[in-house]
Each structure stands twice: as structure tokens, then as C-alpha cells.
Image (cartoon, rainbow, N blue to C red; front, side):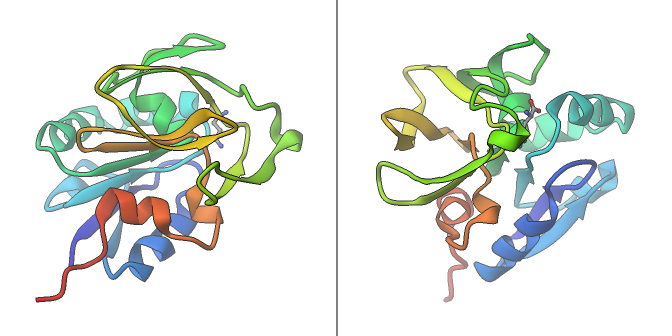
Length: 185
Ligand code: GLN
């Protein structure tokens, strides 16, 4: 069983834990540096990326997050989490960790009231809530799913990023892509 952390400082972290556990992993809510110890993977949930960035700094979690990334542990970043990890952020511009070679435009699918459910071009369920749009994708970044031809799920190395909220659908396909099912020996 893998220990998968879920950053729980702000935003939509709640439902991620049940999806992670449905795959047989242990979900651990992460709020302090010590919570990063012995994690096999991490979810960065949706929410408000500006606030999450400030909280990561205030709680002195930036170093622990970077170390987990450099150690090659799988990270699933959804919506605001993706904005935190993207290399380029616009509308408005804001600083980010830049772990993934993509450019995102914030709130580009419309406002909260324009949130919507949809189906990916591959037939998978999607939920968009004030979602960012991936406007450029580097050559080492693999596109795992698209919506109307646009990338909505991408992976570079150990980091998988969704512009939508996979934890609000009843299909654990995105978490499985990021962390895999538990391997029984
Ligand atoms: N619009 C939010 C932001 O820019 C992200 C929305 C979400 O995570 N659902 O941080």
C-alpha cells in the first residue's frame, strides 16, 4: 500500500482521500512539514491557487514539496494545483513552482456559475470549475486526455496534471493514472 498525501491547506481536498483509498492506497492529509515524511505520492487539489501559494510559503512547505518532486514521487495536481506547478501562468500572471513545462490561463473556462460537466474526447468524465486552460504544452509533456481537441490531462515525468476535478466524478481513472492501483503480491 502506498501512502498518498493530500495537501489540505485550502480547497477541494476532501473527495481526493476517498478516491485514493478506493484504489487501495492510504490517504494522509498534509498540513505541516512533518506530514511530508514517508509519503509515496501527493495530490495538490483544486481551490484558489493564489491563496494556496501564500499558505505554502507561510507554512514553510515549499521546500518539502520541491524535495518530493525531485525525489521522483508521483504527484497529481488538479486545477489550482496545476496552476501552482505550471511553468507559465497568466490571467493574471503569478509565480509558480514551474515543475511542468506548460502554460496555463487561469479561469479560462468561465466563472464559478459557468462550471460544467463534460466527457473527454476519450469518453472519460470531466468536471470543470473555474478551470484553467492549457495553452502551451512543452515537447516532453505527454497529453493523456483532451476535451474538444484541447489537452486537459497531461504528464511530465512524475507529475500528472488535470485542468478539471477528477475527484468529483465517479471514475478513478485519473488517480489510477497518477498512482496506479495497489499491487498485490
Ligand atoms: N480559478 C482557480 C485558480 O485560479 C482554480 C479553480 C479550481 O481549482 N477549481 O486558482
